[in-house]
View 1 (cartoon, protein in one colour):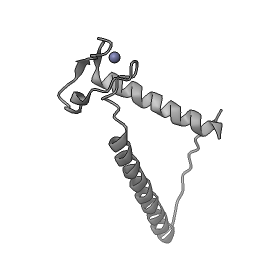
View 2 (view 1 turned 120 degrees about the vertical axis):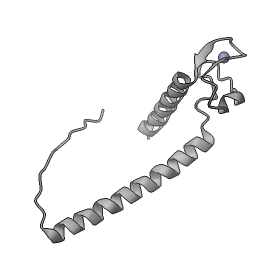
View 3 (view 1 turned 90 degrees about the horizontal axis):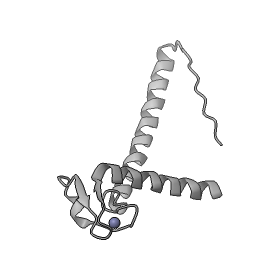
View 4 (view 1 turned 45 degrees about the horizontal axis):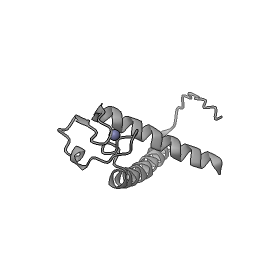
Length: 104
Ligand SMILES: [Zn+2]
């Protein structure tokens, strides 16, 4: 189990140090945003979070249309909300990845 802690510091950099800090955080932000956008692109391309019903794994291509907020699964007949289904799928996918990574 991981333990996360937070620390707060106040610093008083001189002009030269401020420039260096700005450059460092700018670079860090650039790298973070670059990899975030790559992951988002890959995730959206390969993981249909709102199309697959997580209990019976039926894939509904019609849900690609964003105006469809609720749909009835033709396989099991259960009506469900698009956003709740997608959030459950994302949670299960995240848990799968977490379990896989913690096994290593
Ligand atoms: Zn179903």
